[in-house]
Length: 218
Image (cartoon, one colour):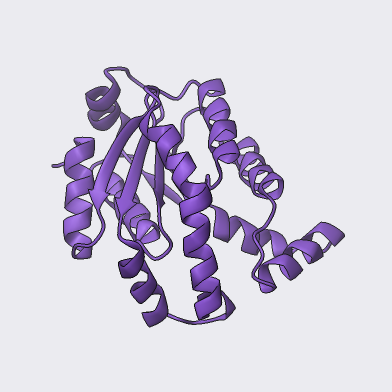
């Protein structure tokens, strides 16, 4: 997904530099609404901008779904892994978003990461990529919700294999054992602008809190 926003009004305000792309990383428990907030952020950036800059949406689930449509042994193996409820190896996920950046990033686009990174090693690899591309002060938006809140949200929206009770429990357990390490990594890394956001609010209130903490209010 590509969206447009104003480098002059936004990037100069946030970084003090002209023509410097920015990166936003959304992270949080399953069901916290990070995908919705990522979409809302891109819509907001489009509203305040012009056609001088684009935003790349890097969403691991979408990248996996597109990859599984292709023919090949690896695609088949990943499809079987997803259907079984087992996590796709981090090497495969990293390869997908790396290929996406190689194919689409020209040095001018801004980036919104949604659903990646997950594990600590993925966060460290993304860190090296962002520094390689000379991205200034990436923003990490941690959408905080309790485990109980997340579980109820996931159960209410149950649609498929990934939303069965045992799958939900596995995903929430995995957040606490793996994703939380990535959050701590970002929270304690001065390279990033880390912001905590209360996800247990109406969608609009969550968005307003994100915009305020990122300094993107109109």
